[in-house]
Length: 438
Image 1 (cartoon, rainbow, N blue to C red):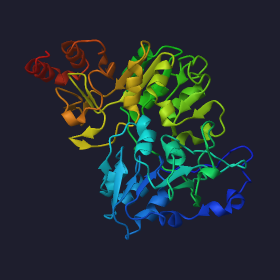
Image 2 (spheres, helix red, strand yellow):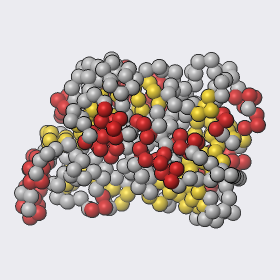
Image 3 (cartoon, rainbow, N blue to C red):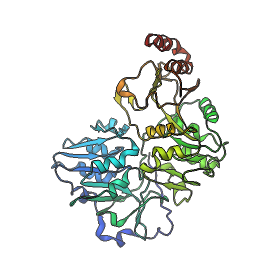
Image 4 (cartoon, rainbow, N blue to C red):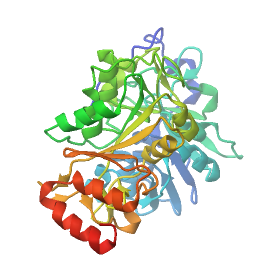
């Protein structure tokens, strides 16, 4: 899916940044040409596709590793080059479809910046918005951990490039300056790809919306997982009043809450009167462009556990692939194979654990594969546990709400079985008895 947008940034429509800073203007190939044997290369979210594509075309490199947070076409091209190692904390559908090879690096989104500081790349390339007249370089649609790539302490010979995307919005909040860059890559972009894979929500949303209505009070601050069930169900809470938004990704559902008037941020205790996020999806670009009510901040701010816990009545709503009778959640693996990554979900879960008024909520259809497979399972494979039994507060399926916090393992199992599909409850009861929790 592509999106074509005009940038509406105030006072910047007729400004040609390439004429103001011609010494910084470069091509993707020129930037990729600066990579040397043995280099570690760090890139942004969203990926700087043109730079990665140019780098992937080089066959003269040895022992080069490229860190791409959420690989798309450019990351897939890197993963197809046997001379370059692709590393990523979040695996994507486009990688699987391309048959590209990637090394998974388990890193929480909140820790991306510190990861960069611990593992400094010699060459970094981040996607940014069009430079403004005063030299400000907006982060574009995401800052996430990109701030560390740009602002890290550099050694002699280290380079930082910005790939200028002319179709991203101007979003208020954190930003860079032209002096932060060794070069700005000029490409004739016409659109922007979604950052995350598309997901399809279940057809019957009413039980999930009803559960969220019960669990999320007026005036609460909400976070949503991206796409599918969580986002679509939250978007239907338009009857709520004075909700606040403090999230990882600004998505369609949260935008709809703002447009409806349900999310005003009026009662927020952290970043009052502001919707706060670190990443924006393309469908929100026009709404976010020069919108003073929306604020973009680095991941180490938006996903800081203490900051999350300080929000008023924080409600973190995320999806899950499966949950076991111990109360452990798998959000990353399918059939023992890495499917995605943890992103910021674990940071929000841990932030909720630090506040007596907060709650983490996992929404999940009770079954998969047309009802033949239960998503509530006896035991998740050890390497597939994303959130432990110490992290998970509430689980919701179309059959009800299971409040798990402070319960014994036997009680957790009982409540999870009660919200499983009726066709699978007996086998789950038998499994619980064999495991000693039934």
